[in-house]
Image (tube, rainbow, N blue to C red; front, side, top):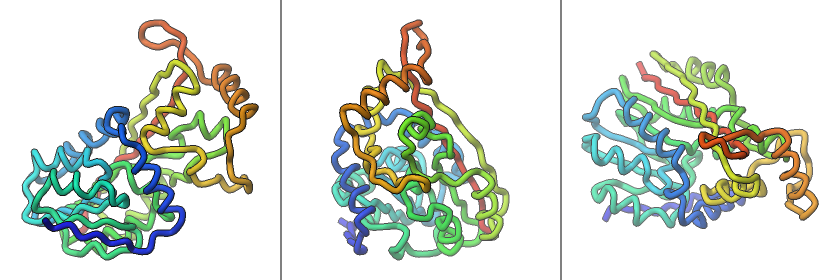
Length: 269
């Protein structure tokens, strides 16, 4: 057993994020988009034989499982914010070092040949800082591979509630990669429009995948904490149907929720 649990003095915001994901007991059953993204990341790994892999924000181990089956590495370091996931991650990779804590502030080692992160760094206080951090943690020739989301992610929720994470746009990621000295950078976008039977089903899906409008960062022009009321929920449902409805593949009336994923691959010279 190589688990090292490190509290790293989580801020109240990070504690809240960890708790929401700890409560998402059926995450894997509902996180189909996240799994597709993990499969895209796996196919983008440049070499199936690695010296040292650092995975940041492993969650329930969706990506960890895929890598364990297809990637050989002399060393594995698996980071996750939520301590509840440590036994699951250790079971997937018994020889891995499991580091529980805030990847923004804790020491996760250096000289890694691959740093990889799936659907996690948007929860950082400063997501762009992950680029410079990774440049320091990678060995020469090492690969940085990550997925996050664009400003159009959950665009329906942002439009109707003015709540959402502040996702950097593609140009900001390009600048951060260049400033950190990365080369051969490839940035690609994948968009998924998921149909749901109702706006309430959208909110339930978000909660089951660890996301809550109450727990998202408040957008810059909003100064009051967001709280659902009966009247606000009724207005939300009415507006959602009016603005974001359509027909699914079977021709049934539905509403849509947009995932827009950014995948970044880059190499340290």
